[in-house]
Length: 364
Image (cartoon, rainbow, N blue to C red; front, side, top):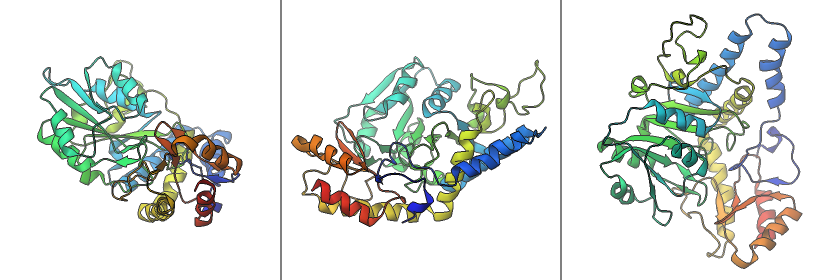
């Protein structure tokens, strides 16, 4: 357990699927990287800040086994998805976007405003089954949205198989890693996706405002972003109002004057994750999650029992006593949340086996 590395909190924190805890040294690191150079009146402050953002991109590249040139900072997943979709010129006969009713609503809201047709895989269908995707990938589908981990049910989807299927059918793939980044191993080289979007607010513990997109080198040239700004330019400091040229890499999606502070905080958390190693983090999560699952009577478990199919979150449904379980946990300062399918519990490095034993005592 490494609970002393995180900000001090009262009770047991099991909400990394929602808002992950930042590191204890996050404020100090932010002061050093963001405030101190500004306070010093540094004339080259932008160069300093851009270097800090490059640290963020570099840590993402290490975590996901990718090239930092193809990562672009974003303010949110919804914004990133909108930018990607409107940058594409899909063939007239392949303009429909395929997604699932189990996807996070915010992204669906953004897609609705692109004015492209949407096709939903019904929530009742098993999106871990490749034949379901194959059946819904009709000839009019030009882009498929795949949520690596579905927050409602705690399931992992077989991303590699889905992206290969979409590629075989001439369909672009967009992967949402909001619920998996920082807790599940992700290898972009293995996935062969076209686009990936994610956030640092959850398992990474980097706070809100530090989202990102990754664009495959094979598709970046065909993308023509419409919402651009001086940081989308190949040379942001050229300052020629009559000349615009896209950055040659994913930064063409960046836009106008960017935020800096959120990415400094997030980079600090990413560096910690890379030092510990995603494999060790996942193993710790599984050990604690398995303790919870083994204590169930069988009927309470909503998320998958198999570690290969389960995300970092255990979801339990107690039917008639759901409210009383939540009340008991609240009284013991065990911090969880609840959605339509059950109570969500997300053990992370900030948690110990003793904390999970106490949790089990109060709910079973």
